[in-house]
Length: 326
Image 1 (cartoon, rainbow, N blue to C red):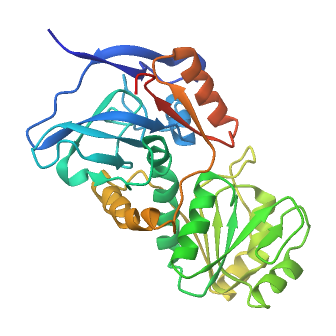
Image 2: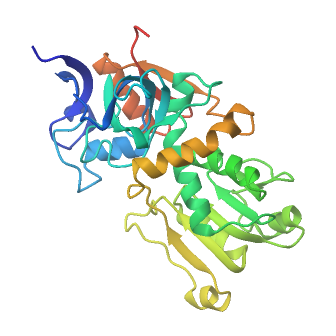
């Protein structure tokens, strides 16, 4: 008799409230070179909502969504069984069943042992945020001592950026709608020049990390980007056209670049290498998981759909799916 598991499913893409279900499906049976991981927690990211809603044309259905997870290896090579692992990245949730389920499979080379001081929920909440932040930093080739403006610094990716930039010896400048400080900018002001000059001692910023995608912030940021500056974004314009406009003459005269970052091509193996690199920093307290985490039972379909909608609406808490029995 085929063993089953509970999993979040969508048979076709469309409105999340209509197409998302919690169903019993066959429990995966790993290939000889793979491991079976019992998922203890899996995070919901904005990309998961977009995936179910049809935002990723290469997604195949029926499908279980989800990219981030933390759990225990329960089947595979003897050297791997029993390990507490965390994972993210790759095609999980797109052309391969993802982590919003009780189990997931992965190659032994795709496994990363999770930090010993984190709970499963905390570990699951870190994946996409830190993966994306690291990809943005690498794309911008941030150097030690550079000032970096982070748009959306309180969000999942933004807060991860702030931590990783500090870890690498750069100086992140955070953003908010409140009064500016020695390390932050008030984005409601029309011109940020005076604020940036004060924070950077008139050095301006070497890079901008845009996790928001607002046209007004885009224009204000370019004005404080210095010579050879790099502007990296992960979020499209909120304008109906999806477009930003900029002064091309100023861009080339300052030898600046604008680049987008897409984490989907990052394989689970590459992602596991990054998580392994970050493990010690978490254990030493130099990196921390999201401070606000909301746990939602995987088996409760209504609660799961509501959780997806909360993520779409911009939930301040990182929402993770858990099994109530654990």
